[in-house]
Image 1 (tube, rainbow, N blue to C red):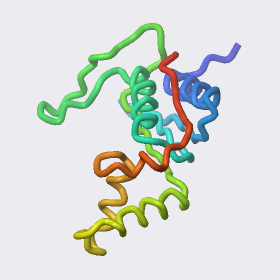
Image 2: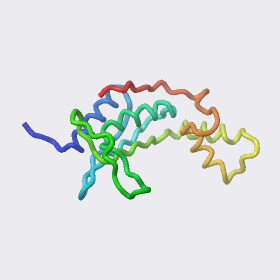
Image 3: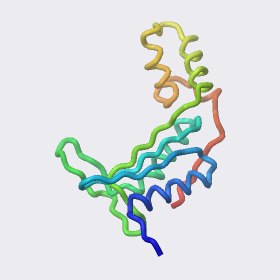
Image 4: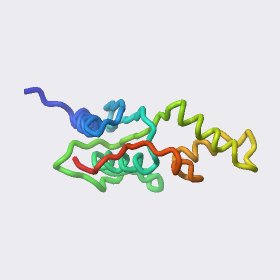
Length: 146
């Protein structure tokens, strides 16, 4: 039986869980000298809450986190029961349709000039500004199961 590396196993487990919940994503494992990572790119419109659920789920596959103050990697989440990597990067590629809706939402708000619209559009999509998602809720959830 072929054994696979921890970074490949982590990517495989993440990919399977996302697929089980009908989430379209590309999951890639990477390794280099003294580091490993998994990149997760989601090709589906997600609410900020669903995106946070996925971030949380993927977080269990990280050994810890990088502390910029001490310039060291802190092994704060080492687990024997899961394959783990040093870094997990999760990003969402929103559809042109939801981007257009966010752009229209921002355009209808007084006081935001055209030079600020891209920033506010991004903030509306990731839930850090406004209530854009109250009228634009996709039906995507992910339960925290490994």
